[in-house]
Amino acid sequence: MYRIEVSPDLLADLYEAGTSGIIEHDGWLEAFFEDRESAARFGDPQACEETDFLQQTYDAWPPLLVGEKFFVVAPWREDPTPAGRFRLEINPGMQCGTGRHPCTQLCLEAMERIVRPGDAVLDVGTGSGILARAAKLLGAGRVVACDLDPEAAKVVPFFIGSADAVRPGSFDVVVANIDEAVIGELRPDLERVARRRILSGFRDEKGRWACITC
Image (cartoon, rainbow, N blue to C red; front, side, top):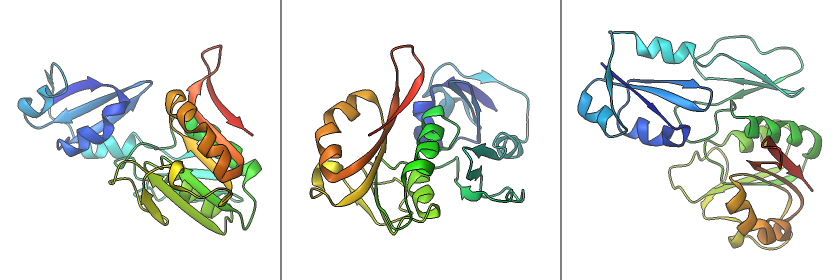
């Protein structure tokens, strides 16, 4: 068995390459492969002792309380949902968006305040679909997700593309957790398609992860 340390951006690539397990650390991932050749695709692999990486991976994703309403949990966990919270199940082996990143948590907290029952919500760059799922749990009447990656989770009506393909005023709320450069490019379209916006995936002037609502 071999281990490799990589950036969180490579999560999807690791699973596609057949990783035996992944452990998420603060700002980096520890991935394991059965053979050295596969691990070497991502850097300099280190041999390690045999471990039950499946169980280790499961244990690495404990339930998480986010905001006042969400209980983020992997689908294999049997922990009871705390009273007054929505059970938001997300598979950490899927696309980007596990609920652990501060930007995802900031978006979920903002959605608690902004999404109203019956709202039409557009999730741009949906990834794992965590924000689209959250919108449904909050009572949104219509939720649509889009992503440039055709392998993104299709947990609600989904199209391949971005906000530039959406008609003006089609939604009440648009949420986009991407990065600063992409948000900057999409800003006119995000303002065009919805009158309420939740934007994240970047840092403020002090280097802290930020979420803008407008």
